Every structure is written in structure tokens, then in C-alpha cells.
Length: 95
Image 1 (cartoon, rainbow, N blue to C red):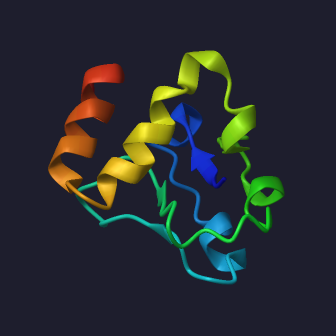
Image 2 (image 1 turned 90 degrees about the horizontal axis):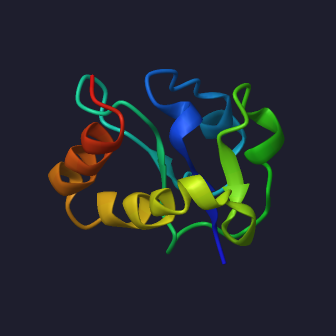
């Protein structure tokens, strides 16, 4: 199980979650990404990030709302194919 960043983060990208993550598993590329991503292989499921998010975009994997379940896949995909993850975000929420 891991934590997932969902749609409310898009175009907000507040980095308070990054500051509290003890394993530095939250990433993005400045100027390229519209949201932050949690690495499912690095996340230790501590939950420190969730209460820090000002837009309530972070969920435990089993608590991701149904309409945002696709973001679980997108978070993992970013660590394998960043361009594909960005394309999915843009498809769901066009700029």
C-alpha cells in the first residue's frame, strides 16, 4: 500500500508534502509537471504527507475516491514513463 496524489494537486503543486516526507518519495520536474507524484516503491506508508496537503489531494491507496482512482496508476507510471504520465494528466485535465 502507498499514498497517492490525485487531481486536486493539478496546477497547485504546493510542496508542503515534500518537506515532511521522511524518505523523499514525492517528486516532480519543475516546468514540466502540473502535479506532484508519490513513488509507490519508495513510500513507507507513514502518512506524514496527507495532513500537510492544503487541497486534500493525498490519499491512502485504499481511500482514493472512485473518480480519482486512475491517479494511483498515474503516480506509478511517472516513475517509469514521465511523458506518458503527463499525457494522462493532460488528457484528464486539459491545460
